[in-house]
Amino acid sequence: MAKIKTTRFDVTEHLRNPEEMAAYLEACIEEANGDATFIAKALGDIARAKGMSQVARDSGLSRESLYKALSGERNPNFDTILKVIAALGLKLHAEAVHSHTA
Image 1 (cartoon, rainbow, N blue to C red):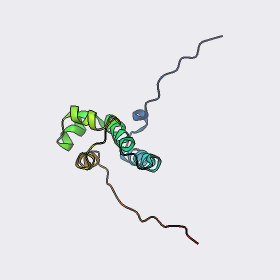
Image 2: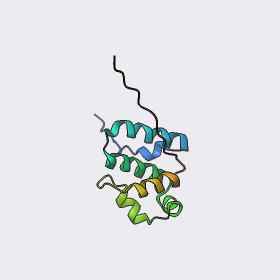
Image 3: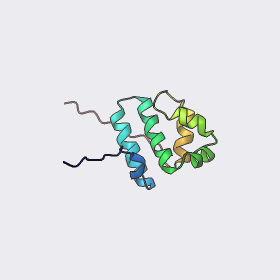
Image 4: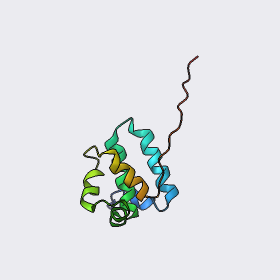
């Protein structure tokens, strides 16, 4: 029986354009249940797909601080999140939640 060779799934290979990046971030925000580190890790995935050096230049942050902030191991400050979102060419927006009370 032949051995099956597997490779690690890397989401960055599937984030090829701004629309895919925005859809991925939106899905992660929905799944996060308020976990900011989960969202930060998603931003890290998108930043790696775009190129961490480019995101660092565009955000005015160092690559090292970006890797730390977007590792999913710490809670980055909101200022960093806003800079990264802008550097990724994405936009943060709010939407009203409609309750379903009878």
